[in-house]
Length: 140
Image (tube, rainbow, N blue to C red; front, side, top):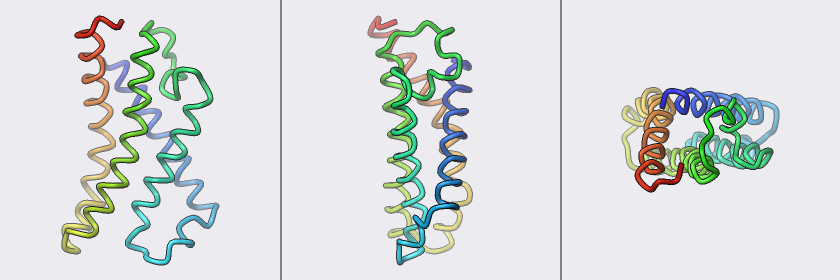
């Protein structure tokens, strides 16, 4: 399971750095008039970059990091890639919801603490959930 965790986390870090570079060098956030929507736009761009980078291989971006050594089925890699997209898309939706509902002090705490914790823990949860699901359904 730890092999899945570090591969997923490495892919999250790479997509995060690519997104930060894209947002820094391209006028993506400047085209959004309300700065309260910037975190949601950031995660939507991260989701688009994750989708685009996962199209480079047949099994997705996470497979690139020595995934062949794990000898998992294509179903496993497909589900892991789907959860990878879903992580960034759900962060975008959750951020949009949180900025609309939460008071400013909780909104700041959400951005500062919750999002990084989700990025770290989602790797662990996704890997263990998919591994359990694949073993339970005999898809290995």
